[in-house]
Image (tube, rainbow, N blue to C red; front, side, top):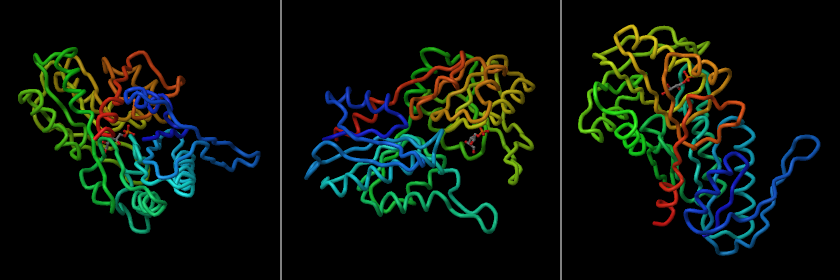
Length: 298
Ligand code: R5P
């Protein structure tokens, strides 16, 4: 097996390769003066099973284009099979038509990836459980929830804890992690957004919250969902608030918002490589490399 990495999350790609006891294979990715990219596969891939590691956040358009060119380069160079490890699948929140006239961006992305020759896709904690249905070829949907459950048990503690989903779409996620933690109680927040601006308009808590609230989410983008949910939980009696989210995008000023919020600590995974400018002191990153390496070994 050969592993190639795009430019989005080289640290994770290196960890996966190291878990598998190999080195990353070589690709050239250069940018022309007019900003167009050129990709060239350097190593011999004829009749080899190859893996590409690329996450598509922070600069999703650039990283998707890089990915398309890498797949094409590998296919033309004779790779036998291509497995795509895309820990964060960008554009996944645009998975249906919210308002007439909109594109279903996720469907477009998956059509391109599969038509270029990806045989199998491995990803993490999709926004919706329906997303695997968009793929025609094999898709493996892994989850960071077992890693979060372990952290909660050993670091945050289960005493006086309530798990909270900040969005009704996260109900299945919260049920699963509650089961992993011997049935810790959970509550849910009903969130309403303005579809034009994306702003959180209102939040209603369903259920009760105890002293320690542990919010579980799939992705942090602007951080506004979490800050609004944390304020509501405090109002309802929570004294300590923790956040576990698989994907840390930290768009706009999310890092500052979270750092200055009442949230005590934010745990994410390395599904997205967080640029130094978006790192903040309350942040802890848990690696998913060994889960991916284990999947690739099968
Ligand atoms: C919502 O449906 C998701 O689970 C996240 O809560 C949401 O996408 C986070 O977005 P933001 O950080 O911009 O509020």
